[in-house]
Image 1 (cartoon, rainbow, N blue to C red):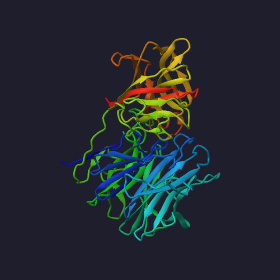
Image 2 (spheres, helix red, strand yellow):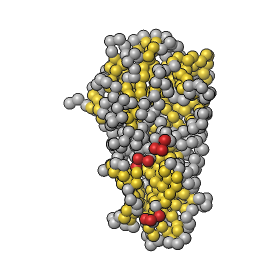
Image 3 (cartoon, rainbow, N blue to C red):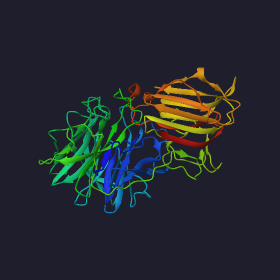
Image 4 (tube, rainbow, N blue to C red):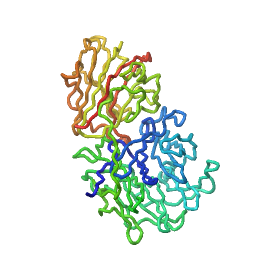
Length: 527
């Protein structure tokens, strides 16, 4: 029976795939932005089944994200392999909302995909989306889009390239501008390949929103000039805003052991009936591709739209054990799928050892903080799902809070929290922030001063989400009317963010007394 690749292969927030093959193994690196540890690596042997195997940036010494703006930090990692060495390029975006970007492009290496990785070497900052090309003659070249902040200039001013010297760890020689892009504009995400005497330059165009697309150009010479595919783009959803996938772009290619070609790319799955409400974030899909007789690439199924499923390569089936839905916090370290915001896991604020069988969080800064939050979360991957936890917490005042959070960024979140009220004592209710405007659902605050434990739950059904609370984990009370899951989307309120929504647990102590909160378990499952 013919195997099918069912898209997306990486559901939930897994954008900007960088796709390579090493022998019989396939790897995809994806962006993590402000979520730490940074740069996620996924592994497959058949392109059908995928498994997250590591996150690369695990220490503050590798990259310092504290204070970085939301949807900044780690952009578009580029994974490559040559002569027994894995190379990983990434951008640390320090600012992004002004005319300037403040970009730090780094390179790290490892002889094993699981690490250890070298300390980052900073290469340049002229633009983002760096890519390292290994030419057949042994030379190595750094490509990136160039950002031009000047008035009356195109911000996306072209794709540039400069030679990289692995002996000195520095760029050397002249900077070559090799491609200006098409009239569509917003040309970024360069990926360079060699085939049949051509250099093929794959780029993303149209911006990462609804006009996103994949464009191919080629040249007989490394430094150009590059000719654009006359039937560009290879793929886009810009012409059909009703299609189940949207924002398709940012492609990356591999050739299989059997000579077949596949392209990984990002896409979104908007809530049905909308084109921009995509709270699951930008996901990764894979398309089968074919080459035409005149040397251009096309989607194997025809047309420009990405396939919801496509024929898999003729490779042995290789499956992975799935993670359990429920985490009892009985291990010694936090692993997949959890991440924190901007800072590494540290025993000073997060611990599985202080009270075995519990996750202890010490309250730190607010959900608006860009520095030191005590928040542990995972991407939401389904439009029908639930998450539950059990909390033990003794707040002394309204400055101390802990609970269950759905988080997009510092301006958009929903939070079912336990706190202290000077009138009712310990209380429980929902606070929210939409487009930077804080609010409280005060009409449904529960007085829970006699509860020993707080069972907290959120259910998501399409665009609706509901929070529930219970004193025993059996009898549940709704703590809100349906809230809009769609507000936790990239383009909600015109903000143009780049991450997806997360669900997890957190604690705050705005009096900076580090009040501890203890979580007995965390469960996430599709419905």
